[in-house]
Length: 168
Image (cartoon, rainbow, N blue to C red):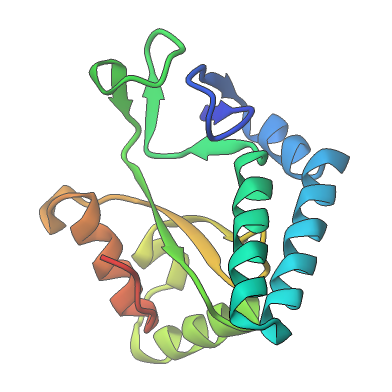
C-alpha cells in the first residue's frame, strides 16, 4: 500500500493500492495539472526575471494541487504526524532540473549495467521510476539498505550509482 494525500497541503492520509496509485496518476485532473505545469515551465525559459518569479509562483501553486504520494511511510491513524509513522523500507530520490529525464535515466542504467555483473534493478533495488510533473526531473523509489545508513545516505548512494546529483 502507498500513502496518498489528495493535495500536499492536506494532513489526511489514505492508503491506496498500486492499481489505484496508477489510476490517480492517469486521471484527467493530474494530466491537466501536469500539462499546465509544463506550459509554465516552458514560459519560464524565455521570460525576464520579474515574469519568471511570477511564473515560478504560479507553478508552485499548481504543484500544491497535485496528489502527494509518500512511499517511505504509512500513517497509523490516517493523519500525517511524525508520531504515527510506520516506515515501509522504501525511500525516494528526487532529481530536479534535467532535460530529457527518461533518456538520462536509460543512459545511466546502460552505464551501470556495463560495470555490474547483476541486473540493474535487482542490485539497486529500484521499485519505481517516474518523471516529475514539470517533465524536467525524476523520482526514483527504491528499497533502503540499513547498512548504508539513514534515508539521506541511501538517496546519495543511489544518485552516485546513477551519476546524478541531488540536493542535500
